[in-house]
Every structure is written in C-alpha cells, then in structure tokens.
Length: 163
Image (cartoon, rainbow, N blue to C red; front, side):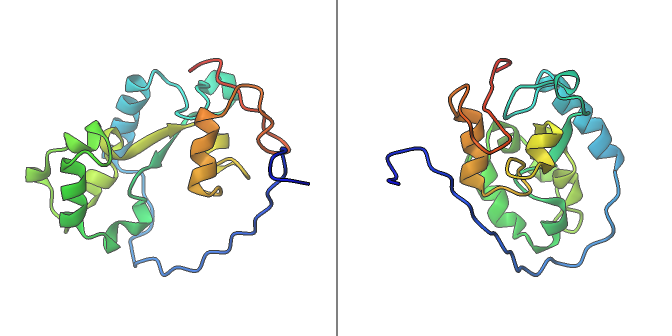
C-alpha cells in the first residue's frame, strides 16, 4: 500500500515524565464559575465537533488548556506570561490580568477556564483515539478541520454539522 491511499496509522504511545508534586485535584469555585462563562462564550459547543451536551449525550467538559492543572508547579510563569501577552495562546489568555497573578498561587490562571479552558465533549476530551488526553496533538487538531464524512478512526467519522 502506498501513502497516496488512505491507510491506517497505528501508534503505541508510551509516556514517561515526572509530574511535579501538587495537592490533590479539587474543583475550585473559580473553575466552576469560569466554566459556566466558557460554556456561554462558546455557545455550549465542543471546540472540535460543535456538538452540545444534548447532541453528545454527556455534559460538556472543560479541559485545562494550554496549562494542564497537574503541571502548574513546574511552569516558568514569567516565560509563559510573555507568550500570553504576545498572543501565542490566543486573545483570552492575552487579556488575562497578570498584575494580579502570583506564581505562588498559579491556579488563579490555571483554573480560570475563560483564559485556560477548552470546551470539549466527553469524546474529544477523554475518548480513545480522539480525546485530547489520549491523542497526539496533530491528530487531535486534524479532527476539527477534517472533511465532513471522513472516516478518521475505526469508530469516528468526522462531522461538523454544528460548526
């Protein structure tokens, strides 16, 4: 088979990283409040497929993006702030009020889903072969821009009827 034809790409991804120590995960008031704002701002639709909670049959989920919560304690926040202010992580992160931020309490940014959140359906958050937690980033992004009707995985056909 040539690469010029549709062909299946199977990968085994094994990750070995040292996560920094952190307190057990809690749902903060900031996360809860800002997730509601994120849902409203994004029209209650998954950033990848455009489905609503009703369409997908599951509540929409908010993914910490670009900074994963469990990694907050290893981030060089001054470097990250420069990239945000330059617009690298989008207009919402760019508009964050860094004057009130302290690297000693990074969750004021991390848990603010209006600046560090990506609204996803359960499939595109945690789903095998399609969720951001389990799929190499180039493949994850391709799902948003793939042609409607494209058989992307053995179980997923790309549909964007809501985008």
